[in-house]
Figure 1 (cartoon, rainbow, N blue to C red):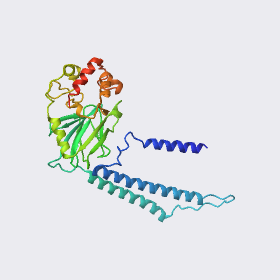
Figure 2: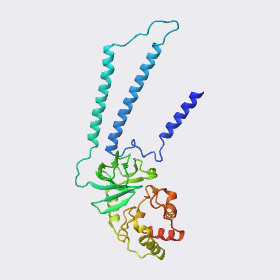
Figure 3: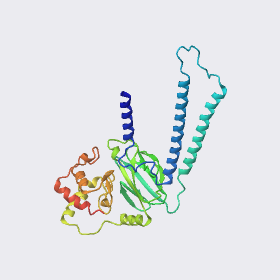
Length: 333
């Protein structure tokens, strides 16, 4: 029957709506008190809505069944108009529900408000680009991209700015979302209760590659984070480059790459693209692609095929140069 077909289609659509590439990346799989407080508020409001909806459906069904006119019955149905008690009841109950929701919301807002900065807190400046995230650690002298390393069980204060259009910074497992607006600095805070890797997203449509503007938040234990900081603060390994690596270094530092990218300790000071210092210490690049040889070669060969619309889309290196550039980039650890 037709109605069964429609029910099947609706059910299948709802099933697909609940699917994600990474099921663990959801506001319900919380790893911080911030996300937990917001999830709790959502759950309370959701089940309140379910109860109210079911109550209305049940009362409506009873009214329809009891109020049906029987064959041959010409009497007027019973009228409730003017029933003062009933009208007061269905006015007072919604008011009480709204007041309850108001206090729940205020309580949650107070619970997730940013605490005062204390010694030991970490400050990070997150800069939105089309289409990747740049992360600066002003107190540590570190600049990286696409991966945000933080120590677990530590308050992290994030300053949010954009260099082009409106973005939105969102790590579902750790916190809510905050818009990143050109010409304006917004702020938020996150805190990971446990070590782990959590996917972040741009939650505001920002152009053709909005869906590929991901980043990873990597929460480390104290010793692992300190080791990462020391590795990022260290200069590039002062080792003798092979002929192929030296050829790649020349292509990168004296070629078209130097106009947009930066590598500490070289003449590359570009700010348009991601900072490439310690590039191969990261797990992702270009806003969410796994950093491996296959993806990197494809990027250098034709980045527009991997990520249409990016600013490197017009740059295509021949295969012999790709091998040299790859050899050099792998030294950036």
